[in-house]
Image (cartoon, rainbow, N blue to C red; front, side):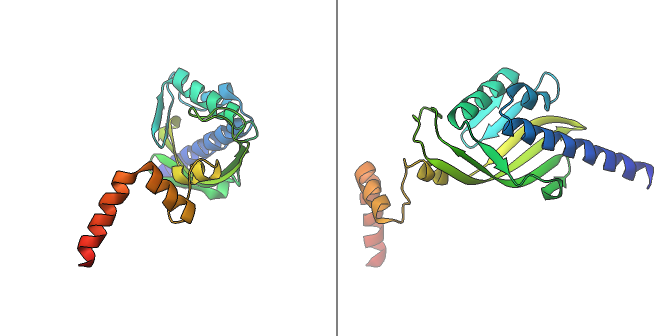
Length: 179
């Protein structure tokens, strides 16, 4: 191995170890251990519609998540499922758990969640500086029972009742297009 290749391999291994430790800490609901995977003094998480910047904000976000879903776990986390790209490590997984506490103002529903998620971990050299998680918010809300599939009968009725002006405008546009 050349010098650069061995450094790259070492860096990849360090990053991989960090990501696996991060998921292990999340699965254990250990806020301190999760924060310890980030570069000292800095931490940032980004979820759809939410950014937590700094160790205190990130810790609060994890506490809310772990309280809302006390049995939450990421499944199928394996080294071979990690993808390295530049300064990022990417992983596709599933998150499972039962909604038993308040989450983003939504009281517990007792519903089981099994949701695909993609996590992108951004590094500065060997140090984790940001975790971005991507998931389908509508799917999450549907699993929690607070949203309907917009293509279902119940979803269409809910859209009509909740958004009559939007539905009326769409119907007018459709009528104009049909003539």
